[in-house]
Image (cartoon, rainbow, N blue to C red):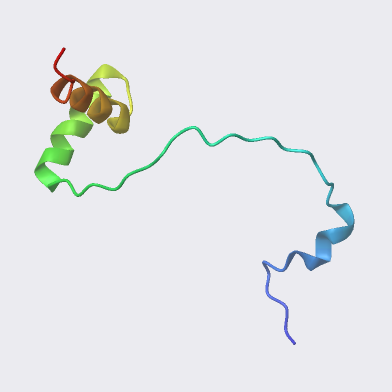
Length: 68
């Protein structure tokens, strides 16, 4: 059997076991967005210095705010 370059079995003796604690705090959702709208969202996010996902979340939060 020929081993590929990505075969990590060559390096098993140098691996270290580490303890990791992680909490999943976010959910990701996939929504189709028209390319022209995505371009505008990207430009606005860049101007504000935030990620597109944060910009869209902020916009949706304002528009979908429950009536009080």
